[in-house]
Image (cartoon, rainbow over all chains, first blue to last red; front, side, top):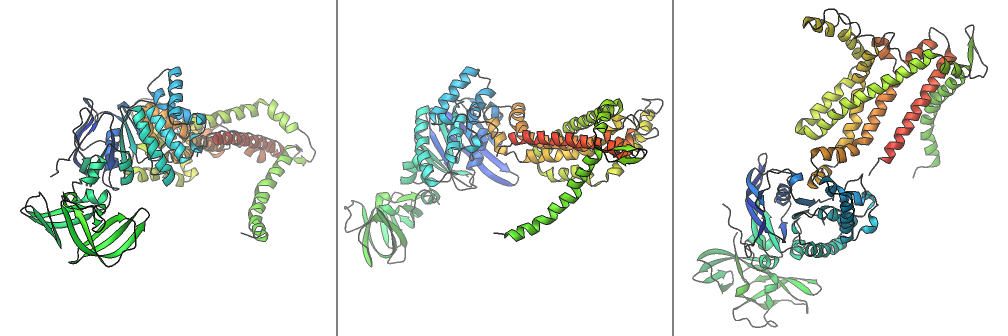
Length: 355
Length: 281
C-alpha cells in the first residue's frame, strides 16, 4: 500500500493531475499507482536516484510512453490519450536534442512552423526567445558548433517559444560542468519567474532540487516518498529515506513509552505512539554543550570524538556515545577537539520518520 | 611516433599496388583511346578520331543514352525499394531488427550469376512467370517481351543493387539520435512532418551514397544485359566488350571506357560535394 504524500498547502488550481499512474516495462514495474498534482506556475522537481522512475514519469507526461494504468489530466483535458504532438507541453531534453541540420533560429522556429504560425510572427517570436536566453548573436550559428551551455539556452528557447502550459526538463544541467551548472541554475530560476510557465524538472541532484524548486517530489522505486517544499522536506522528512537522501542525518532507533523515547544512552520527550519508532536528527542540530544556547527541551549527552573533518565554515564530527551509538554532528569550525565532550540537541528537532 | 623509414616502408605496397593495377592501366587505356586500328593492327599515332566516331555514330550515342536511362531507372527503383525497407527496419521493427537485417543482407552472398540465371528461368518464354500467367488465364500465349529487354535488365539490376542502396540508408537512419525524433513530436510536428523535416534530411547523405552506388555500378554492368538484355537491352559495357573482343578495335573501346570513366568520376565528385554539404556532426 502507498501512503498519501504529505503535500504542502494543497494547490488551488492544479494544472497537471497525475491520477494513480502505473507503468510497466515487461515484468518490471517502474511506477506504481503514483498520484501527483502540479499547480499552475509552480516549479516542481522530481527527485530520485537513477531507476526511481522520475524520467519515466516525465516521458509519460510528454507522451513518449503510455501509462499501463491510471490517467493524466491537464486543465480538464485527458492528456494521456493524446499523441505527443498534440500536447501543450514542451521538453528540454537531457542532451538538448537540437536538430543538427538546422541553425539556431531554425531550431527555435521549428515548433512555430509546425503549428503553422505566420512568417512575420515566427520571426518576432524567435527573436524574442533568443533574446530571452541571450543568444541573439548566435541566430545564424550551426547548432552543433555551440558549447554545452549555449546549446542548453537554445534548447530552452526552442521549448519556451511555443508558450507551453508546462515545460518538462529532463536533467538539463547534468551535462554541464560544475560552475556552468550553478550559473544555469540561477538563470533557470529567474527565467521561470519571468515567463510564469509551470516547470516540471527532473534531477538526481538533491542540492539542485533544493535550490530551484517550489516543491520537491521525492521518488523511490516508482512511488512517491514525500512531496513538500524544500524547507519542509529538509526540516520534517517523512521517511528515513527522505531524511538520508536530502542532506545528511542521524537515524535513531528508539522505543517510545508514554511520551518518552529511549534510544541508547539518552531519552527525549516525543509525541509518537508507544512502541518502536525511528527518528531523524540532523548533524547541525547537535551542538557542543559548552558554547550552545540553553534549550528549554535540551537533551544532553556525552560522547567521544572519533574524527573531525574540517570543511571551512563548519566541521563534521564523528561521535560515539558511551553505549556505542554512532552520531555525526556539524558544528561551527573552531579549535581542534579531542576526548569526551558534552553535547546538546533540542528535542523538538528530533523528527519521527517512517522506515 | 613512427620513423620516416617505417612510414615509407608501409606506404610502398599500397602505392605500388595502385600504380601497377590502377594508374598504369588507366594510362594505357587513355593512350589506346588516342591510337587507331588499321587492317587489324594498332597504329600508334595520336589522333582524336575515336572520340569523333563516338559522338557522331548514332549507334554509340543511342546505347550510351540507353545505358544512362537504365542506370537511372535502377537507381530510382532501388531507392524507392531500399529507403522504405531501411526506414521500416530502423524505426518500426523492435527486437526483430537484427534478424530482418540479416535477411536483407543474405542475398548479397548469392552469386551474381546465379541470380541472373534465376531471372532467366522466371522471365523466359517457358519460365515460371509466363506459366503462372497462363495458368491463371491472364495471358494465352507466353509473353516473349519479359525476357531480353531493357525491362528485364532494370529488373535484375534493381534486384542486385537494392541491398547496396539499403545499407548506407539504413546506416544513416540508425545514426539519427532518437531524441531528435521525440523533440520534433514534442514541438508539435505530427509523424509525417517529423519524417520530412527531420528523418529525411538527416538520412540524405546515406541516400545519396546508396543512389551513387546503384547508378555507378549499373552504368558499368555488362553481365545483366548479356544474360537477360537481348539485343534491345544492350548496354555500353557490352559494346566495349565486343570492341575489345570480336571486333578487335581496342582504341575505340578504350575511348568509350575513358568516356565512362570520366562520367563516373564526375558523378562521384558531384555526390561527394553534396554529401559534404550535408554532413552534420
